[in-house]
Every structure is written in structure tokens, then in C-alpha cells.
Image: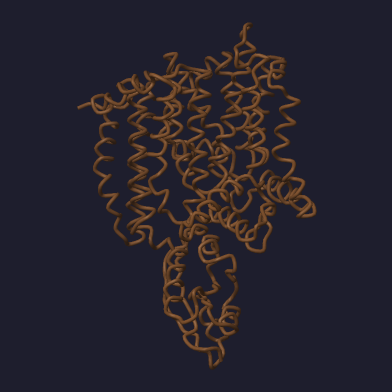
Length: 577
């Protein structure tokens, strides 16, 4: 049996799926949810960035202050307010509707990223329609939806999936303006009478500014500059309605910007531009420095299963670089990629805004019959599609062995199908048509994500890494045994992850052993998580007549750094001395 016979029904179903744009977008939503939802509701808050964002949003809801962004008592002046407002709207609505523990339910905060990722897939389809046929536009969107990096960002309550949607929206409109300038007659969409594309473009720029500052306008500006240098003209930009459009984009941002500058007495600008953005440009921030070429090296993993198809499209991109459609995609990809490689701070998601352009480039090469499928190196490159799935499977098993736990039932249920499909892809990929290879790769990615996100990261093998949820649950159970203590105010020693703040409460007191001892001795209804290395100092500082004792013990592995931790959970069993 060949891969074509396995996947052929799905490829044939494309004819029915693509009978209308409405049907195509519906199926893209269904496929996106199938790819993004495994593990979405069950993964713990993933340290460190996700709980930082979620905690800042939670504090907005707790205080009613929707202007200032804070993590406990610290001002979080790194990103604008857009993502926090979106998260607050969803979590606040859930809380108002009576959803239990809505403010500490992390998947509610993730819904913004899920919507952002699905929107990015749909907008990639819309953008690709300016380059290729409906069929190939669908395949471009499918390639993006199945990539590892977008799948990760769709599951994390951060900015990156949403900012991707704003980038694709802006670039889809910009592409139509550019191509219309190459056609004397233009089109209804880009005519002087139509406001649709200018509205899409400038709204995307404004929302991008409100969510992550300069990223969206930077990608658009780099593209425009590259095309202007190539064509020695930028007159086509007049169709974007630059003056009213810029006014509209700024109108979305400036009111909040004025309020935050007043609230922080100008500190927001100094912190976000000076302490955050410029520090990333000048040096590797927060131990995330890496040399140029890093993104190219990790691209094969972060863009799986799309990456091998991009490699097959690379010769076409070079040969057709003067073609307006290819030139636009290269202007979108190359300047931004070079900048990200030069900047010392390296995080995998930084290059995500160029992934839609890479997916569309593959679709364009395929439509023109120019994918390098017959080169000697083509098949070894394509074998990376099933190959990486097997590596992820091995990594998952390795994680289970490290944690000395067995994978969950989802892992055992999916593993045979993953191996079966992977082996067929390993044998037949590249020998059949492109559609079967792409659909097979997306199907393999879906099974792999079920294995990793549902079978490994949220079940037995990951329990040793779930320190914050386990400590929080321990505190809840201990509180239930103490009279007149519906909740225990927490302190922590030797374990300071943001997820613990998010789950236990904004008032989490981070201290040393002696400080935790004083904290427990001073008032009732308190609890302390004390790491073993500091327990001697903690016990020595307790009052001689203290009724504090160890109520539980939680051991595991810190998700950041892989350090083994052993924490005693201490609470008072008697009255104050």
C-alpha cells in the first residue's frame, strides 16, 4: 500500500472542500482546531512567559486598573496592553458567568492565542489568494497550520499567535496594493473608491502596535523598502491612504499610550524601548543570546513539517526572484530574517511572522510546477517530514524515562497510528504528488501533537515537572483541614516560578528560610513551600514554641533548567503562640 492510497481520499476531497471560499475556510478552521486543541485545556501554565502574561491580566481584573501592567508589585513595562485587554475580556466574561476559578484557569487566557493562530491560518489563505489559485492557497494555509512553532504559540497565553494574525492581515492587503500597481486596470478592491484594503492594512498596523509594538509595522516597512529599492519607486503606496490610515492606526494606540505614560511618569517608554527592545538588540537578553545562523539551524524543527517543502522551493525563489510575486515574498522574508539573525537575543518565535510567506512561496512554486522534486537531494530532505516525527516520539519516551512515569493512554492510542503513517511516508513521500505529501505531513503532525501535548505534557510523564499545580493543590487540601481558613496565604523559598504566583495568588511572598519562618509565626492561615536546601535555616528561625509543622512534601523537576527540587509544605497546626 502506498501513501497515495492512504491519503488519496483526503486529496480528492479537496475538490469538494474548495468548491467555495466559505467551505474552504470552514475546513481550515476545523483542521486548525484539530491541530491546536490537543493539550490546550490540560497543560499547566508553562513557565516562564505564559504565566507572566496571565498573571498581569489577572491583576488587572483584581484591581480594576486596565492601564498599568504589573506582575505582583513590579511594573511590567515590556509590551503594550492589547493582549492583556483581550485576555481580560474573555476571563472577565467567564468569571461573570460563574465559571469556577476562572481567574486561575489558564486555558481561558489561551483562548486569545487560539483565536489568533486560527485567524493567522485563515488570513494566510486570504493572502495566498493574491498569489495562487484557491487550491494552492488552501495548501499554503494547511502548511502554516501544521507547523510546530504555530502549534506551540496557539497553546500559550502570549502575544505571538495574535501578532502573527496582524502581520498576515497587513501583508495580505499590502500584496494586493503592490500587484494592482503592476496592472493598468487595477481592481475593485484597490481602486480609489474602495476602503476595504486600506482599512484592513491600517487596522492590522494599529492592532499590531497595541499588542507588540513595532513588529507588525516593521515587517511591512521592510517589505516596502525592499520593493521600493527593487522598483526604484514607491508610488503604489498612495493607494493605502497613508495619511488617514496612519491617523486611524495611531488612534487605536495613542489614548492608552498617553494614559500609561501618565500612570508611569514616562517609565513605560524607557522600560519598553530602553530596557527591553534595545537590550535585545545590544546583547542576549535573559540568557537567550545566540550567534547568527541560529534561526536557520533550528528552522528544520520549528517549521516542521513545512521546512522540507520550503527547501524544495528555494531554487525556484532564486531563479524567479525578479517576478513580482516572488519578489514580494522575498521582501517579506529576507530583510526581517537577516535582522533577527543579527540581533543577539534569539527566541524561536521571533521569526514566526515570516512563516506565512514561506508557506505561500511553497504554494507558488508548486502551482508553477517548479518545486525541486527531482533533485538528488530532494528525497533526503523530504524524509525529514516523517523523520522528525520519529525523533519527537523518541524525545517523548525519553521524557517519560527521565520522569520515571509511563505515558498516558492517549500516547499508547496514537503511537501505532503515528508509526504506521510515518513508515508509509518514509517509504513513499516525494514519489507521489505534492498534495498527498503535504496532507500526509499535516496528518502526521496532528498525530504527533496528540502524542506530545496530550499524551506526554499533560499526563504521568510530565507530573515531576508540574510543581506549581501540585503545590497549589497541596495548599488547597491542607486548607480544607484547618478551621476558619478557607484559603492559606502562601510563601515560597527556593522556588520562584511565575506559574506559582498565578496559581496560588498575587500575594505569594518570595523570601528566604528565615523570612518564611517569621511569615508563618506572625499570623494564622498561612503556608510556606520550603526547598530542602533552605529547610535547616527555616527550622532554625522558627520560634521555640511554634506550632508550625510539615504537612506535605512535594518533589519534582523545575521546568526551567531541569533542576531537581524537594519542597516541604509547612503550615500551622495550632493557634498563634
